[in-house]
Length: 118
Length: 109
Image (cartoon, rainbow over all chains, first blue to last red; front, side, top):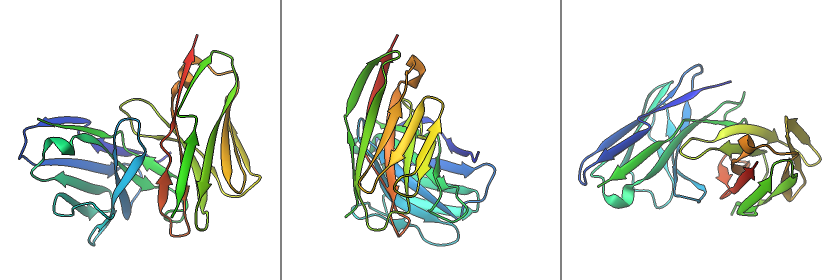
């Protein structure tokens, strides 16, 4: 099946620094990727939709200047948490649709990235 | 607004004790209902897609069913390795996914 790789799997940083998380589709091209945030025992919250070659679409309440998304190629999307603060500590997960038509097939998820901001 | 509600929040089973998880949903134009398994500290792993009421899918000890308002994930004779959080998600007519909060299943030997 389709594989999505996410890196790093965990990162600890100081408050005020920026952190970049990469999401790669390993054996298929993904014109669209999704970035989620998950708090303990809570649902995955969609943050933004990453579109190859164009600007990302952010969900309501998500600061686009805080969470920079770049989808530079058909296999790579990056999420940069800028000027991170402790409240940004969370589990970030990327995914890409794997169906024949975009968004009608299942989503394939990366392994997730645990961010801890001190 | 699309909504997905999963119950129970947590389920503790003895090995071999069958049970069912519920996913109730409201969505504008269902394009698909998805079940995922998530282990602690990992991304969700795809299990099933259901597209229309009456559809059923099976994989090993898991069986997923779908009606117009809800889906069930039946776990038959579970083993400890079935312990995980099971997530339900729906995709609406726009292709947007909405996830439930999940059911945490613990299977004890």
